[in-house]
Image (cartoon, rainbow, N blue to C red; front, side, top):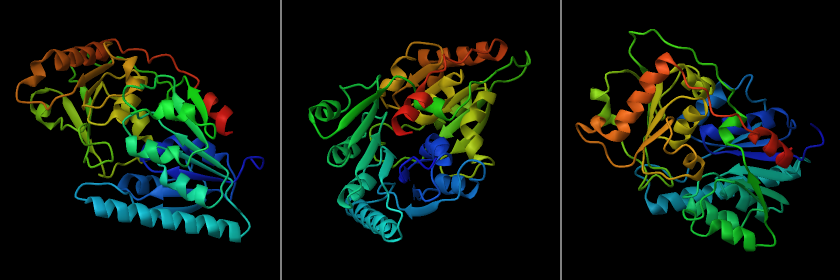
Length: 340
């Protein structure tokens, strides 16, 4: 796609690699990938054939994580900013200047790009509580993309501030981002006497907005009476690119991760989200049979509470009469219209 601008794609999270892969594949040979060092992003890079083309890759450290003190976070952020600026300068010197930066929830590259004179700087988010990133994006983005489900009561004035800025263009998406990299699944009924098969997504925590959100679901496992496959954050998996679509093979998902719960829901898999997180993208599923959320730490016996019991019922019902996935929407087409 030689008409597309030379683009720097910021891949800060494994889901961002899944999200942007279709546009990176359709992009230009001299595009730049900035990838945050995490076991899961590096596993995706190591198995990128068929998912990502060969591109220049700059690996940067994540300015967050368990045990990282505030000074350590600041030093990592400063070093990351310095490395990105140096790479953007190098691109210019070799005759392939970056013309656009596209990022989801990771604003440091946008700030570096602004300082290096990159004219088009896109910030995409569907996570209202990512307040620090939002503040930085206000000072560095030229374009902001938010879902129509965005909750202003959670964003500390971010949307209002964007609307007041004459130098930032606001774009709204009616579709949901997981639809950009997942396919509408076909789910079939299971054997009558089989145990429900559950995938449990366990998080390490320590993310930039994990404080106050992350809750361990592990106390629930012993009393579920289900076959449980645990996929812990940072642990290797056989097919890292196939993990989101693999959720459709399970009867239910128990997740500490909003992202993975959302990926399950859009494929018609009942999810029990154990987290205090609030997101506008989840609101349309609240009260239905696909999303069940436990927002307090589970204790012995809490599997008998209304939330957990309702999820178990949805899982059991779905084994014999699988739910149809919610209507597939136009997120990919909408985003393509914006970023090409």
